[in-house]
Picture 1 (cartoon, rainbow, N blue to C red):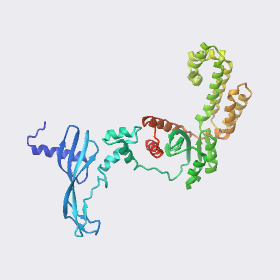
Picture 2: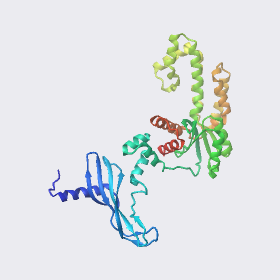
Picture 3: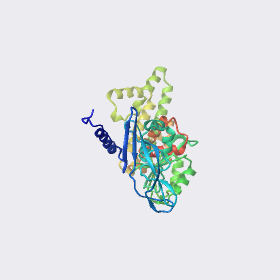
Picture 4: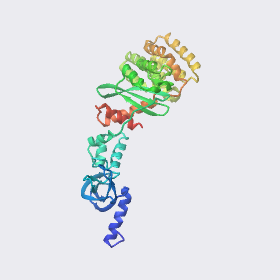
Length: 400
């Protein structure tokens, strides 16, 4: 197996490679036990002077030795360090262990193993899976992860606020605060109540630095922005704005579909994705299918045209152009016989200025929506998380 025949040379070679691979400073390897599923490395530290923690004098007098088994980062298998620890004795009578830089006090695992376990939580996996990887229990892995702490100290110039279904901490919905310009998640809040959001943002002295506040069309979020950031420009998220038109068009389709025979109803339902598809991306065959639907349901043709006209409004190149286009669009919709669009036009009237503001800035809640998707995957993998503090840390760490 080795070109050396001398057992001492083979042992020295293995020790040298192991020492380099172990990468621990001032560690002397005395023996290596290479088992089928475990690796046991016997180590000790060089003898040197230590300062007595009681009287402060220097001593190198050894009282006795103690053997401690330490779990380390797996090296293709479970790895254990057998540390032969010295206990020094001072002239004052104090006995104390020698110091090292790889084993925290009261721990039986190395610092780098704890760091590896914590870093593994950046991936969207369960604590049980992380524990299995490092040969610890899921609860132990989660306990090490408690060392991670995040608390924002300042607010950026642009803030995004959204809600998501968390079912954590006794609340059905939690809130997420992010910086869309820096693509960073700032914090996760336990609920979406207006009073609690105002209380949270009021603790920051840097509220005057916020210039833009991006949110969906939730009136409570807008009220929070007016109270906490009166100088900021409130921006309605484009996705939530456009969604109102799509919902109204879908209501028209359903109402028209219910008037048709069963055979036509199935056709309308199967072809509804064509109504969502941008007109410029439709094939000739898809255009023909839509024409058949519009011939059967003329009101659906009007709704489809209204939807496309609104997309043109959103694509306006300036706020002045968008303001005029949106006003004309609202007037044209209100004079048509489409009561399904009543809620949509009402929302656009209430959020008129915020919608126009969205045409002037590049920021949306798109980054937050991506984080929410990752949160859904995390919840599914972990079968839900009841503890809000753990849930908050997992989301923040996964998105940093």
